[in-house]
Image: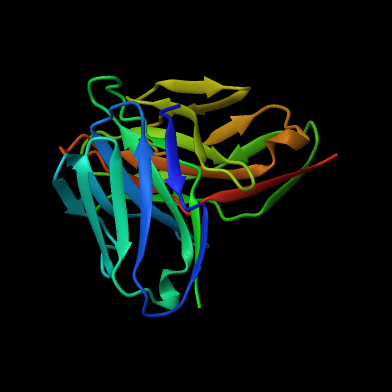
Length: 115
Length: 113
């Protein structure tokens, strides 16, 4: 357990509004990831970070941006929310100095509904 | 490219039945393989893993063997319980510098008493 929390846990918003989801970890893991989970698709990577201020895109990054100004926090922003971004969002972390087997640890998820 | 294919669910079993959930993969290089479990309303938890061919991962009565020749990592349990009802995800990771997972679509298991 990497002490990962996500906030908010649930959010309802309207189309066109910006939304920011927060992932906070207490284990000083270097890598952090944002996934979305949708029926029939499993989990798909949105963005990830390999260090403070170091981020890169995943397979479904359109419409999302991220920031990591501190090791412990990784923010996911939906610039202008759309109904297609209704999903459950999971944060995950990993650190290569703690575990060479690349085991990721997941947060509890944020359920987002865009109306 | 890299991909993971899981058997479609839902899978419905009676308590004490034998469970198999199939997972096959396509990968360039030598991936690590994982099974994660998601209980209702929760995040994903690591169930077991294997990092090289012929390794067997095991945990809580579940097992999976990394089969390079068949590119498979099937999950098995000899006797399921109602508490095993969950969604199971197969995933791979390739140490290519980015350490990203590729997930299967998940298989929902329902165990009836």
